[in-house]
Image 1 (cartoon, rainbow, N blue to C red):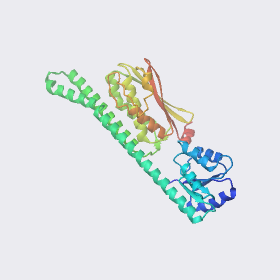
Image 2: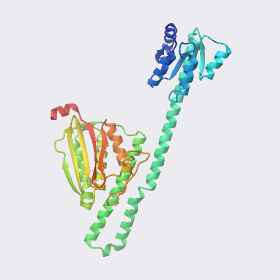
Image 3: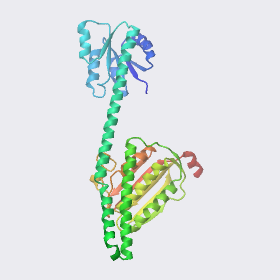
Image 4: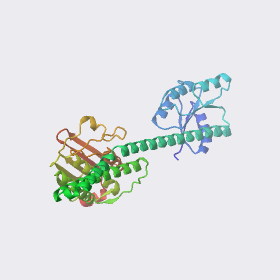
Length: 375
């Protein structure tokens, strides 16, 4: 748990010194300000868990400062304890009316100050934990809802195709010649591969959203990952008559999570085949640039419409456009790529022109020592 932060606000330095010496026992980080104006500056710069605020100060007094804190949406949840030598009912009432949560009379009683401060700090920590649990629950429910939506819609298509084609083969196999059987097998392969990629992306994204994927960078030969994924997409490329050109020889090893990087490369290659036209072409390029590896895949397909570009990497507004052979997707592939690339401190990017194709790529830092040896 991070150290909690207390802000002491008093125009008298001696009062700050006395209170700070007592509050050292809490183990908190302690900052101080000698005016309401300065206190607001500090509060707006960084997280503060509790404010101890003097009432009588030149410029903004304690009441005015507290009202400004409570009227600021970013600061309004920070509890304020007033420090005051005025213990008459009207002063105490004004302290609570301005937004204070407690008050402590001057001169300080060490035990009372520590007791009241510790009580508020415990409440602050408890509220933080409740908010975190609420956010986690909302995130979990959101993931669950999106999983059900994708299972209900996107995964139906490949399985419907599989069932239809196997039914055709079951009833007409004896009437089909070798060429027709081979074509049907290719269609079955495409449908089963589409279903597998959808399901795999879905499961990986679900694990990522629940923060169950541990980032494990190791020395990775990126050429091996590229070639391995090329072997997987060659059958699909042949089915569409797509030509594949490559230029990535002589790359250095990099520090990366091989599982995540494999998923990124696989999705970008599959995406390019998906949107390449029949008998089209994709170009795969990877090279070293300024201590980074830059990998890109270009297709000569339809390009990404402007209204779709804004949602490509948005998990809330995610969109899925059918490929040139009506291939389907969940829209999660690029979102997953972006998350995994950013885990590597890299950048995922896209360049596209409607009617002329798209280039999707990423840039990742490489191991500097290995780069020096390579160069």
